Length: 318
Image 1 (cartoon, rainbow, N blue to C red):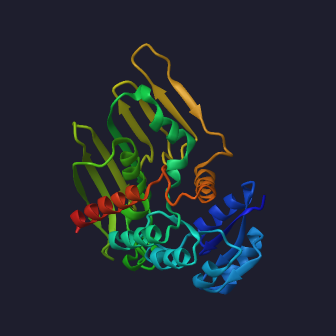
Image 2: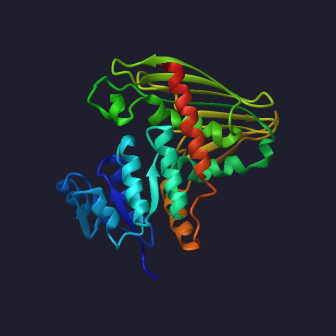
C-alpha cells in the first residue's frame, strides 16, 4: 500500500512543525513544498525529504504526486491556496482559523462542497486524545462552566504578522480561537456573547475577554491577549465532574479530573506519540480513503460558526 502524500503550502514555523509530524507518521510522507520563494521551498523540501519544490502555490496544487495539501500560509491567503487545491481535486487541511473573514471561509466551504473535495480546519486541539476523552466522558453530567485563556506578551511591531491587519493579525484569530473553541466543543453555540478589550495602534485586537452565555444558563469565560502572559490553562465544571487542563490547555499533556468531595482525583497522561497533529493527519487520510468530504470531529459548519463568533467579537471591539 503506497504512502499518503502531502504538499505543504508555505514554509513558516507551523509548516515545519506539521511537516515533521507528517514525516514521522507511518504511511505518510511530504511529496512537495510550495512557496512564493522557491529557495525557501527547496530548503524545506530538503529538510523533509520531499522530491519536489515549487515557487508558486498553483504549481504545488497541480502536482499529481500530491494527495492532500496542508495550507500553512497567513490567514488572508487561505482562500486562494485552498481554492487552487480544491480545483485540482486535492484534499485540504487548512491551518486555523479557516480564513481571515467569514466571507472567505464560506467561499472555501462552498467550493469544497460543490467539488466534492475534502476540506477541514486544522484545529489540532480537537484531535488531542485527552480533550477528546474529556468531551466524551458522560460522568461530567451537564457542563455548566468553561474558563480558558491564551495570552503572551508580544512587543508591538506593525510589520509582525500578529500585529498586521492585512495578514489577519490580532489576538482573537490566532489565540482566541482556542479558548473560544474549547467552549464551542463542550457547550455548543452561545445564545449571547459579550466582549471587552483593546486595540493595537495598527487597528487589530490586542486583547479580548469574553463572556459566552448558553441556553439553560451555562457560561464560558475566555480571554486572549498579545499584551500579557496569562495562565493559559482551562477549567471545566460539570454537574458530576470538573477538570483542570494545565497549560497549554489546547495541547495538554495531562488533565486532572475531580469528582464530588471524598472521591480521589484522576490524572490522565498523554502518549507523546499520539498528539493532536498526528490525529488530524490521520483523519484526513481516513476521510480520503473512505470517500468522506468532511470530518465529524471538526465539521465545516463548526468552523463557519467559529468564524462568525470571532467576527462578532471583533466587531464589538471596534
